[in-house]
Length: 164
Image 1 (spheres, rainbow, N blue to C red):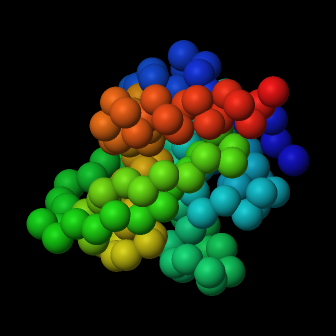
Image 2 (image 1 turned 135 degrees about the horizontal axis):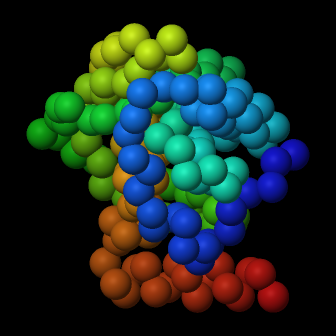
């Protein structure tokens, strides 16, 4: 199992700069996919394994299905549904904590392949939620930042208590 970056590590609030796909990014993608598979995560950003790289892995199969990972380099959200829904979210960087977060019902994502070719994918439902969550993380936005201060503080207290 991979060693994961644990909250409140400041790297979780740093944005990874987009750049041309290179060997370092490809290596991060391989390591990220292995780390996600080791814990059956639905998605991970490179920062979760300590790498400040613009790389995410997202299972596009949906919740409950066998993981169908896509490694995305330089991922960006280019369109979001107006319709939003709340759903549970957590992070390998804050194990044991799950909170309801509001996200768009679908998301259109652009990203580069390992070969550096641009691609676009529209994800719906749970897979869209996972992609939005991980792309936020690439941009230095930890999922708790999507909560009110009261709910965020409650989640942090619960996490600290669980770590004792």
